[in-house]
Each structure stands twice: as structure tokens, then as C-alpha cells.
Image 1 (cartoon, rainbow, N blue to C red):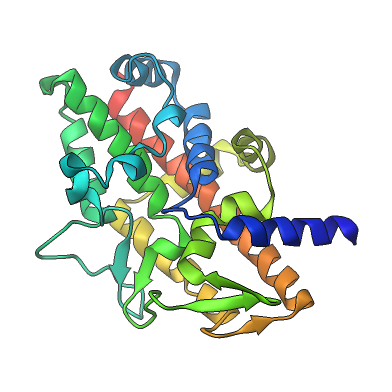
Image 2: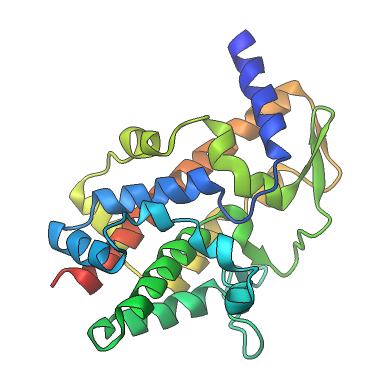
Length: 261
């Protein structure tokens, strides 16, 4: 029981740290799983553009630069909007979203041999981030469920709904990012191939169908008692685990398609 209380209290404490999109552990876990499934040739080619560094090193780069003048146009590239039925709503003006950013970046990288090395490096950093973010439950925005003022309580501790899901990878297990690959990356080749099929738009709509349930688990203003809090955290962890693994496989699939030459 003491161990469970420690997990809950640790969860509550960390949940108030400001984060954006998946937190660093989430992004590192996704890119590490992807890196584990890169072909040797794709990995070598990618790291040549990244000055020898791993894709994990750059997993949160887009979060770090999006406030700078050079990259403020990427501010809304971290998620997408869907209808109440989970259908993707493409933006026709203004800032892009994760689907548009992913599609644009993939198209550019398919012709990366005609690009400068520095431009390729930037697009790799963008791709590894937006593919991860579109799988975060809180980054599929339903038009009938605005998250702006959505607050709830685990026992007597208040949480912002969006921030809860951003930080969930570090909160549900307290794992190091490599633990996610060791513990969760246990699918067969056929299963990985099946999960990797599709496009960013299709993945977004799939994520919407899967993640819609989080609005049934808690409502604005809810106060969960201790038992309900444990149940919520366990369900959250299971959902997040599955989303992280899928994102890692899909990212590996894209990078292998582009850079295994």
C-alpha cells in the first residue's frame, strides 16, 4: 500500500510541472523505440545529417525552438483537430497542424538528396516530433471538447486535463525512457508492420477513435477519490503505453522508407 501511495503522490507532484506535448520522457521513449527498429543503413544516413547524434537527442527539439522567432510558425504543429465523430478537420488558412506538418515534411524528405544537409536535419527533427505528438491523447482536439479550462482533481489535488496527458509517460510508471522499449516493444514483425500501415491523417483519425474515451473517464470539475484516482491512473498508463509503442513503430517505418538507401 505504501508503494502505491508513493506512486500516487509522486504522480501528483510531477503533474504540476509545466510540460508541452509529450514530456521529454515520452518523446525520448518514442524515438528510442523507433531507433531500435531502424535499419543499419537508415540509422547511419540519418545520423550523418544529425552530426553523429541519435534521433533521441533531438526528440524534444521542436518544443524548445517553437517560441523563438525563427520557428514561431511551428507553434500549432503539435496536434490536430477532429470533429465529434473523429474526422480530421484540415485547416485551410493560418498555422498548420500535425497532419499538415507531417505530410509536408515527409514529402520534402523523400527528395532530401536535393536539399542542403542543414535543411534535412531540421526536417528530421520536425518529423520525429510531430509523429510522436499526434499520438498523445491530449493532442487530438475534438471540437466538442475544448480543453482550455478543463480541470479535475485526483483526491484534493487539481490538474489541468491537457497537462495531465502531456506528462502522463513520466507519471504512470516513473520509468527511464529506455525502459519503455524493454518493457513494451514485444510485438512480432507482422504486428509491427500492421501497426505501421497508413498515413498521418489515418493515424490521427485512429487516435481520435481510441482516445475519445478519455472524456468519459473524467469530466470538468470532477473530484476522484483515492480508489477512482488509482483506477484513472492505471487506465491512463495503459492507453499511453499503447500510443507510445505505435508512434515508435510508425516513426521507424517512415524513416526507413526515406533513408534506407
